[in-house]
Every structure is written in C-alpha cells, then in structure tokens.
Length: 347
Image (cartoon, rainbow, N blue to C red; front, top):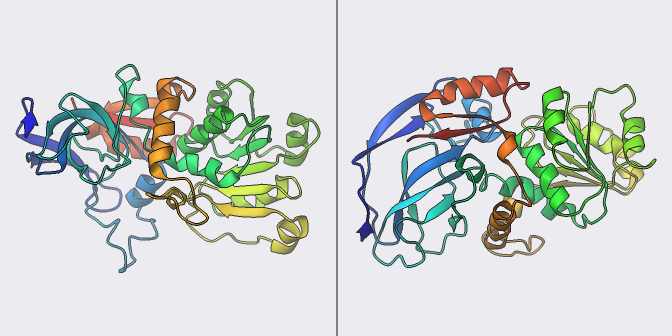
C-alpha cells in the first residue's frame, strides 16, 4: 500500500429520518486490495434524489424489495477529491491523483477500483473543485441527449432550469442543437440559462406558450422537448408544445402520477415519441437499445469540462461546509430564486 499522511477520523452527513440532517464522525480505514482512499475536495448535492429522500417522498423508501435508499441515509453521489492511499494491486491510480467519483457528502471515502470502475476518473487540477464535483451528476442530464437521438440543428426546449435542466441545456449546446430554449418560472434561473450563448429563456406561464416557442424558433415548435422538472403533470405541457412527430424526453425523475394526460390528442394523434432518460440508460456495458456506456460517457464529460466546452461554475450559488447542508436542502425547497447548484467541502 502506498500512502501520504492520512488523518484517523473523518466526518459525513447523515439523514436519520425525514427533514433531519446531522454530521457524524467515523474512523478512516486504510484501503484494502483493489481500493483507493480519497480525501474529498468537494461534493455536489443532487436536488432530485436527495431532496426526495430528505422530504421522505422517494418512492423506494417504503419498498421492502429495495435496500436503497433507507434511513439512516448518507446522501450524495458526485464528488471530486485527492487520492491519499492505494491498496495492493491498484495500478491505474496513484497517491496525489485528483479524481471524480460517485462520492457521498463525507470527508474521506474508500472506493473499489478493482474492476476498472468507469465512474472513477482522473481529472485535471485547473477545474474549480465546486464545478468538478458536478461531473458525476452530469451523467444524468447526459442521458437526455443519449435518448434524444440526433441533436445537430434540432430545436430543443428544456422545462425546468434547476441543476439538471441547466446542465442538460448546456450539453445540448455542446452537441450543436439550435435554437435552445430554457423554460422556468424563476427569473434568476432564466437569466443564468442565458449565460450560454444562443439560449432564449422563457417563462412557461406565458399566456400562449406555443406562440412564444414558435417566435423563438422561426415559426416552428421545438423538435425535442426535455422535461427536467420532476413534476409529473409537466409531461402534458411538454407533449402539447413539441412539434408533430417530435420527441419528449423525461430526464427529471417524476415522483407521482400524471393526472389528465390525453394520450389520444397529445401523443397518439400527433405521432409524438415519449421517452424516459433515467440514469440507467447509460450502463456499465453497451446493451441492446442502450449502446452508450459509462466509460464513454465519463470520458466525454471530463473532456468537455477540462476543455471548457461545458462550463458549470456559474450554476453554483452556494459552496458551503458539509455541516451546513440542512440549510441548503431547505433553501432549495423554499427559495429557488436564491438556490441552484449546491456543493459542499470538508477541509
């Protein structure tokens, strides 16, 4: 085992029950064969999954067939840090490497890399830690592009300009979609979306949304509409405003039942394609119907971030110590005009 100086105790965020957040200490173990020990530089809050668990509405909390998520829950799955020690047999990572991985909100983590874990990637030092912390989270909005099919020159509208929607919009920009339209009722989020050249941001509560979209797209409705809101009934509006024969991509996990969707007029009668873009669309290995794999996805995301073709720095409204995450959850829930992307640090 190779190591630098390693502290003996660490700290992590724990949700013991809904609406409660605490910080607990733990003993830092040394890596076993095939493992690396990482000191966390920053971790990103997932506004969908983590808020669903925090508020107790995540659909798997009460499912006895699911082992995750359950209380007490340690949140987080997107982080950046530095390798402190490597176990026997590890040759692809070295002490001092800066890496991204599906890290939780904790100061240190043991990560298994025996099987060439595609989600653990070396990343350069130039990228700010708070932006690098979003890299693993970005694979979820990337699934919207994977499921959308051809993007070159396609008009794309994104409902919901939270963290996932904003990243999706920027990924579609990197993939040469045109024009790009962001839709959100929060004025500050619309303004941030327009930091990306060529993006037009609209309030979806406009009296005639179809007319506003046509005006933004040379008289046509968008070819692709992405729902990143997580609100079930948004799918009805998304289907209503996409072009005939267009595609509606569901990337925000809808927690609940969509109510009065008229599948004849809103879907069938206009030959619309409605497709899910869950994170499972990008697996460890290529599969039938899902050819895009994690190794390729993460390699692409790291390249986009390092070359600054994907810029996420300005999405981060709060970068706080891990002990302050409860305030961040409450802020995201109650003050969307102030809170967007949130990242945490421990040092």
